[in-house]
Amino acid sequence: MAMNGPLLEVKGLGVAYPAAAAPAAVKDVSFSLNPGSVLGVIGESGSGKTSLALALMGLLDTASARIAGEARFEGRNLLGLSEREMCRIRGSGMAMIFQDPVASLDPAMRILDQVAETLRLHRGLGRKQARSLAAGELGKVGIEPELLAAAPYAHQLSGGQCQRAMIAAALACGPRLLIADEPTSSLDVTLQAQVIVLLRERCRQDDIAMIFISHDLPLVSTIAGEVMVMYRGEAVEYGACGQVLTNPSHEFTAEMIAAVADGPERGGATVAPA
Image 1 (cartoon, helix red, strand yellow):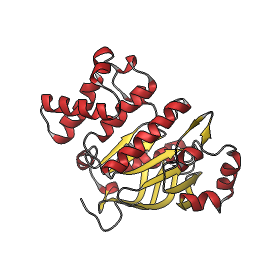
Image 2 (cartoon, rainbow, N blue to C red):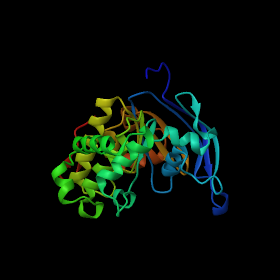
Image 3 (cartoon, one colour):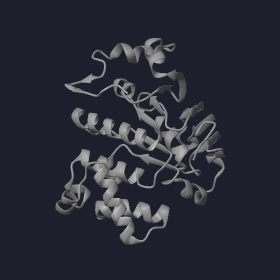
Image 4 (cartoon, rainbow, N blue to C red):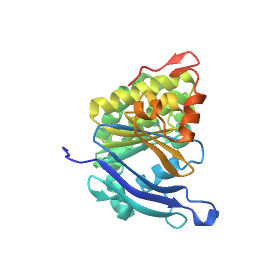
C-alpha cells in the first residue's frame, strides 16, 4: 500500500510499571519510520528498548503497565486499539522477532505447523495451503524440507536455525513493519552475520520497514539507516546513523563509540555495511 507519510509515527510514548516502584521504563519517546526504512534502537540493558517494542505491538499487560502518548501505524493510533483490533494488525501489518528463538517456539509443535498456524490465523487459509506456503517461507530463510523431515521440532535445530524459523513465521503474512528485538544476541558471531544479511535482504526485497533493537553498536551500523540511542528510558540521540556515530551529542553515545575498538569486525566475522 503506497503511503505519502510515515508508516509509523510515535509521539511522546511513555511506559511505566507502577508496581515496580521504579522510574518510567520509557519516557516521552518520539520518532517516525518511513516505509521500507530501518531504524536501529540502541541502548544498554534496562534502557527501555524492549518495553518500547512491546508497547508498539500491544503486548504489555495494561493491568500492570501504564502507557501514554501516541503510536500511529498507517494513521491509526495503536495505543487506542482493543486487543481484538491489534490481533488483526499483528502478522499482516506488524510482526516481531523475539530475543530467544528457542523459548519463543512451541517445543511440542512441528516447526512447519507453527509457521502454517500463523498463516491460518492471520490470513484464514486452510491447513493444506497454509502448510504449502509455510514450507516456501521456511525455504526462503534456508530451512529446506529435507531438514524439516529429519528435524521437525525446535529442540532438534540449532539456535541459528530456530531464529531463521522465527523470521519465516514473522514474515509469512507479509507485514509492512518488522520489530526485531535483539534477534542475534543468543547466536555466535558467524550466525549473527548470516541473520543480519538475511533480515536486510528480505526487508529490501519485500519493502518492509524494520525497527532493529540491539545493545551492539557495530551490528546496528551495518543494517540501519537511522539510529535512536536510548538511555534510562529516554531517546538521547536520534538521526542518520552516520551522523550520530561520527558526531554524537550525548555522553552515553560517545562512550559507546569509544568502547568499540574494531568497528564492524567481530571476532573474525564481518558483516557487509548496509
